[in-house]
Image (spheres, rainbow, N blue to C red):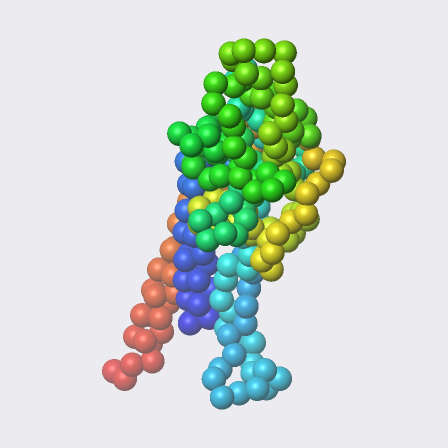
Amino acid sequence: MDRLIYTAMSGATQTMNRQASVAHNLANISTDGYRSEEHRLRAVQVNPQGFARATALPTRAFAVDASTHTDFSSGPMLATGRPLDVAVKGKGFIAVALPDGSEAYTRAGSLTIDSEGILRTASGRAVQGDGGEIAIPPDSRVVIGEDGTISVVPETGSKALVNAVGRIKLVEPPEADLVRGEDGLFRLAGGGVAPVSETARIASGFIEGSNVNPVEQMVAMISLARQFDMQLKMIQNADANDRAATQILSPR
C-alpha cells in the first residue's frame, strides 16, 4: 500500500513545482528577452539505509525534479524605433557587469543612459564593452551598429563628426553551459567569462519579446492540475484500501 503512497505523494509534490514554473512563465509573457523554463521529472528508487545498492529491493520510488530546462528559442522582434533599443539576432547574449565584478548575460536589450553617462540595461546593469563600462558623451545622438559598435554624433557644433565610443560585448556561449540565476540573468555554469563573439549581431530600434507561448502554457497548466487531482485521488484510494485491510486483519 505504501508503494502507491510514495509514488503519488512525491508525484503530487513535483507537479505543484511544475505548476509554479508554468505560472512563472505566464507572469513573464511581456518581459523583454525572457526565456521560458520547464521542470523535468524522473523516478528514483528509494534504497533502505544501511544496505548496499546491490542488495536493496526496488520496492519504493520517488518522483524528483531531475533538471530545469530552458527554452532558448528566439522571441518575436518588436519594432520600437528607439535608438537605444537593441535585439540580438539569432543566438547570442548581451554581456552585463554585476556588482561583485563578475559577468552575466541577457537578451533584454532596452538600454538607457544614466546620469553619469553609463550605458545600462533597464534593470540598471552596466553594459559591458571591450574595455569595461561604456560611457556616452553628453548632448550626443547614439547610433548602434549590427556588431554592437556604438557611435555618437554631437547634437551641437559639427554634426558631421561621428565618433566610436565603444562596442557592446556580444557573446555566444554554448547553451548547455548556461545557468539561470534568481535575477533572471544567465551565467556560465563553471564560472568565468565568455569570449566575445564575432558572429553575433544585433538590430537597433527593436527589442526581443518573451518566447513564452501563452496557449501552450495554459494547456500545460490545465494538464498539470488534472495530474495533481489524479495523484490526490490515488492517495485517497490508498488510504481507503489501508483502512479496509486493517478492518479485515483486526481480531473480532
